[in-house]
Length: 357
Image (cartoon, rainbow, N blue to C red; front, top):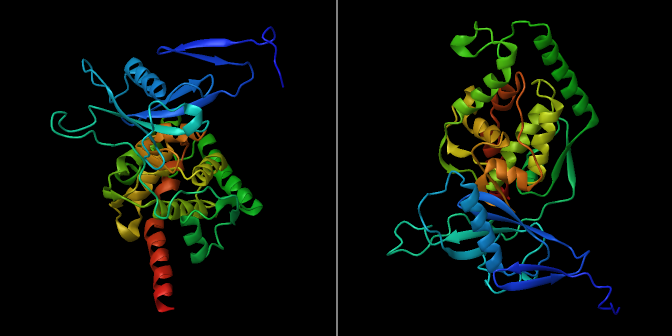
């Protein structure tokens, strides 16, 4: 179609020496840029600006907002601009629309991202860890959990990312009924261990209503004390899937909303940083489950295939998810179990079966 000059409404924008023209109605783009682990969303009126412009805009926001990783009185210079997924270096002269998609993720590498600027190359510290076998595809098939019928094979398939999770109608009803009991206890100011009292030595210490949320949050933070390397994405998915399955039984008192948020995080493959060491075995996998919950609270580190490692709150935000806000009893509900041992045991059983065949 031919558009007359008179009917054209041009928008012009100065982009570091370049003029960018765009017609009204053209699709705008938003790119999430990571600078030293902090995420900044950079809007582009069109995709016509260059990758260099994108990097400079992200750096401007970093210098303006001064996140915790900001170092004052230091000149910051762009080294590389890379796709977060895969780590491919982007040509600064390429147009954004030619190499990136809307809502894509990039990592900005600075010259100072290295131990010694005079002798070392800039390190790519914030590019995503790669997934064995290539790019991860979010599935569109659901596996329905009821807390009782999950098989080892189902769990392994969930770990591999072959299914999303949903709950059966019966499981949803049980979870709601269980939560109603907890809410009634709190409403009546009854003294019940772990709900309106402290833990361990503080079992006889009654907690005021306005402190119940803080009690549960601090329980998670105090027990998130594991060490070692992070679990692989597959093992973390299995751990999260098993925890969701246990909560679906309707015995823990977790709220339907909190359980829904855990399921949404699983379905987006937003996985908390969970260290390999720290469990106390049959008494409960308190440390790893606390790390799992901590990320869901928007604290600590988290990983997704789209963003790589980053602060949990920003990884969740990039997937349009919000951190969970714990109510009475919910911290205890999230960490009291042996799901790490069970998930690792299930994986070992599957591998043993393959060897036996």
